[in-house]
Figure 1 (cartoon, helix red, strand yellow):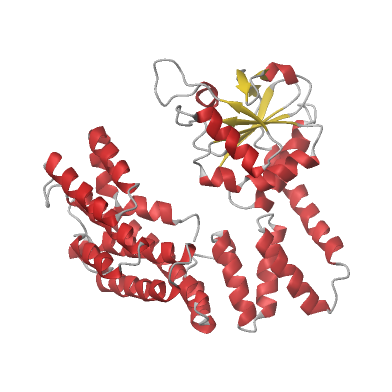
Figure 2: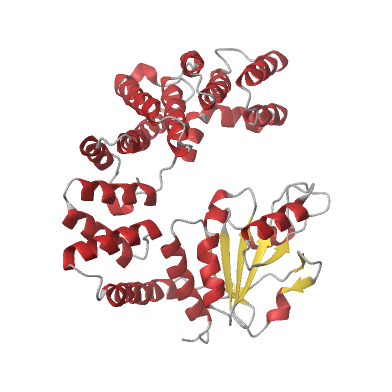
Length: 425
């Protein structure tokens, strides 16, 4: 699927809304408030209020109206009120937006284990509707360029196939699920999303294609991009293949070492060599911590937030790194937190999850709401973001995002080893 995910699909489906929101901050705030309303009846009332207060026009503001109807539709779906869900989906003018919200609804039913049977039905209806308009020029909204439209349409099919495959899998229809899972990849399966790859390997095994599943999982391990789920599947297939677990750990370590060697060579060419921006922040216990305190040691900074799902998903892997590298300083900077109750919110999260992290609180820049000192100094494209700083205070690596535990661990292992070397090496 090449980095296509449902958040991107929703963003594409609301292309018109994004333009409107940039011009009308008040409207955006109303929409955010409405999206948090779990009572579908109240969500409907809020929708009508937004339409009236902003004088929204069904034609001129079609994108915004689609977003409003889609949001109410999802609220009804979460309560298993499927007739109302279908009614509000029918009010959406753009067929592309209709399929986007239908796909979102099916995904919610699956991820939250609400109703896999209805999810399968909605996922199939999504594909049927997609087929009905994908080659129809008249389906393209006037405000969307032909190039954007064609790109959206090409992207859309892969998550739609993936959702239907997931539903079929959940309902025990393994042969059909395998067929649609194969369609969900835009290119080699190895380039797909981790969840889709793991499901595909499982479906191959259930359809008696163990060798193909083994080769796929082995390729993911050798690329350093396997997940714990994939590693467990590979271990089971290894036992099936060799009749014993003997030798698996040794071979797995060899595969991983190969990843490290390759990564080091790739990363060496992209090493940075700039002065790392200094900072001084308070930790959760009120102690003042400065980057300069750790001169002489390799420092890894993790920019994160309690609202950032990928950030939190990366924490089990980061815990392994912290525990495996006592010689390295790991600083977890909580940033871009809503200011009211931020310290207690972060503290409670850490206490609840029992992560052994040294957490610092980024500070809001005076007079600049939404801007924070340290994250503004480092300027990541997003969070989670990791900065690796050598013992001389030089920034050697800086990357953003999170894919799998294995990929994160392998990359950080290689970066840390390279950061320990003198600059000339």
